[in-house]
Image (cartoon, rainbow, N blue to C red; front, side, top):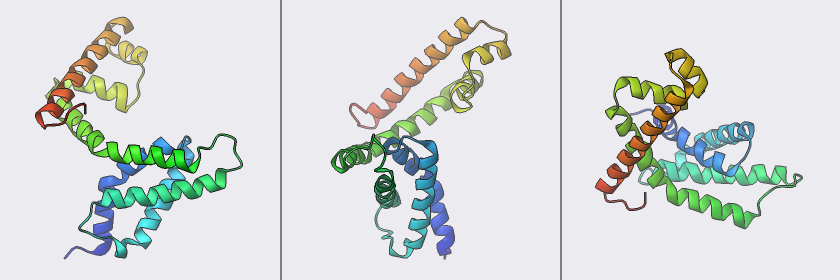
Length: 175
């Protein structure tokens, strides 16, 4: 039998990045996102005994995150640019509805990246995961920035086409 702590950590580890992306779409400041994410994780842990394992953990976690965002907003009401509760609820609902498609796109991207030659895959990883500049990558590879920029754009187009085909093959439209 799996220990309850291990079970929670497994769920949280699997879905933390998705919850973080959700919160980031609702809260503009990275430091605030980190604070809200930490409060969400501790709240989920405190209430984990109430989690219905027949339902998706991600939905439960996102609901907790939404509540933490609302609490954060209450603390931020002094600031000028705060969405109304109705607007925030609309944005949150829209994001929650899009999460299955976003996850499908992310999984499709991973599969499409695996199909690229190693050199091209490493170029994409360096540019987007490590956030290396095109100028720096071009210098490292001894090619012109212009040439490398067009290579990256070509790879992005190939990846987009691959993702769209993958989603269409799985029966999704306008994914």
